[in-house]
Image (cartoon, rainbow, N blue to C red):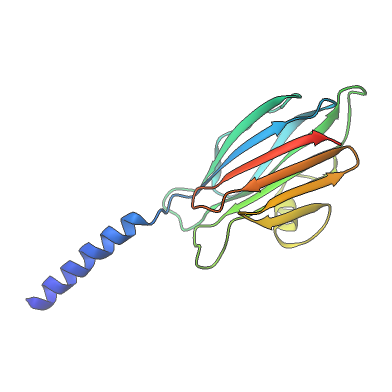
Length: 180
């Protein structure tokens, strides 16, 4: 009888402690286009885990912003993980040769993984898919990757991308694109 009470008490304490630890993983994104010469257009996204529950706009014109929310799939031990891209559309030539890419990783298990993010500029022909996510999460290239809590400033030819991600269970990823 005493052992049943001890088990019940342990389960009650365990349930209360578990209720204090957030398990809902999501990543809020705030995308700002501070360019005067470029629009961000032709949004493409790939979710490697989770889904986009509040999508970014298809186009972000100069001096405009867009918001998104990526969330983990309910009742799974997986996080919110993915990549999205926008073509850089030159306003004066109405042409696009490059795209910006933003990678985010908000894991389910913080004992094994950390929040990561990356930004970069790629040729317009690069697909927004699992390969791009994998490349930005694991490799190096025409992008910069950091753990959450740090800042990125990535410059290439015509634009600079600055980004930061809060290091929390439900991080906010802020990305700004501006003319050089």
